[in-house]
Length: 112
Image (cartoon, rainbow, N blue to C red; front, top):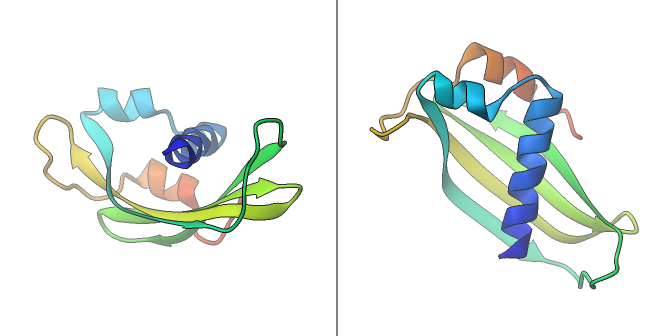
């Protein structure tokens, strides 16, 4: 469960670094809903390990996008994962197209 939180924090940091504010999305009446998550455990992460999270954008669809994650210890993957997000109208859950600003910020194939 911790890895999901680490990955979501990394997603938020990546989006903020690229100029996308979740508060602004929320103000526009939109939200990001996780519809699928895969995790693969490859090795341990210990309490005092220096943990880095890498994020990549493999795909963007009309209403959804996928992010790939890697939890790295000494540059070696300990956990990898992939999440599929759908853009929805807040309070309704109705899917909507990925806003252009978010689409531009995601830039398929780039990693952080």
